[in-house]
Length: 166
Image (cartoon, rainbow, N blue to C red; front, side, top):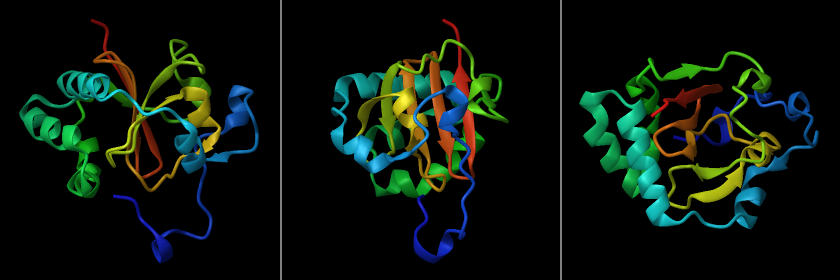
């Protein structure tokens, strides 16, 4: 769940440094990027969510997450903090360091579905995310290739790379 107001520290670490990818150095608020981005096709989003869950969530928790993620409601936002503990760590790993440590298959111009779990997923590029101020107090998914490649932005300033070859 996203935190607001007095719960935010005075200074926030910004883990996504656009300069490390030779992109724009002035972050754009994510809200502005999402306002201008085209909406994600709902059928495509459902396919990505379903494949994400089947590929990257522990088997015993899959039904629950399919149900929660497909409906994207306030309940989903409130319980999204539990998603990290249900990730299958054999396919999802914490990226500990700058974005240049991400695999080369993550092309900065790659279009994916950015889902903040609010019910309004958008089509954006990885470059747009790196150049934005992704709220480190929110859980977000960036779904790139259904069941094969995704990023999970965890609200504790952590980024998980989920990848699985089919």
